[in-house]
Length: 341
Image (cartoon, rainbow, N blue to C red; front, side, top):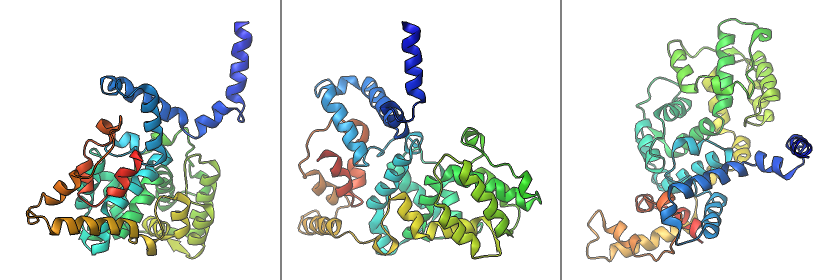
């Protein structure tokens, strides 16, 4: 009887139409495991709320894309939804930088990222900066929109970019398309990061390869690649427009392509990137309150005003909202409040 039940259970695992398989594909099991882990690690803090309310709050924050705030980078990059959520949080928290037209260096952008994710790696920031700058001058200044769309491509499609870079380097070395190894999803974890591979590429000029040959290899990669990758139509469109192309020229074109942005679904289109009437209205209210405050000249007055805003208790506050005031002081009240509604 036990053996028969085991066989039936195995059949359900293999059946792609079962609810369990559907949950696995949508990463529900990952979030459930993380919710239980967080509950066990902080059970003393949640006993007053109850497990049911805690789980409801947790999955509500996942749905509202607030669950990645102040979590470790391993959690941020664990699922496509987490990556898109982090990009959206980063945009909303620091949109005012782009609106004011300020230019920042790669390390300054990294400092902003680490306010949201304390262990955000510098290699990922530098790889995104190279997409914008396309040279070794990583201390040059970049606009917020340019860096944001480059970061989006680098963070969301990191495994795919790793594989494309290996193919590009093989073509530079003179290997024929038939000998180019196209990594599969099972071997992608063994690939070096884009930043590590780019360190080797920095020693040689931005050489170009035959675009048609690269297109053929990339198309084969997409057929076998099970991680997220840009739409194949966008890749073909970019590669068909040039006879020769370099690796970072391809990445820059992908970062600026609106169809790629829409496929990810984390950010608005570039013309609307700095437009958010509701957030602007809230900021105007806060600025008005600060301007009439007797201590308006104090750098902490804005935070003091924000602390007066009433908030509901949340069982997730100690994990995801430990540094809420730091984020809100940059003008992100809408994003951080949404998980509590």
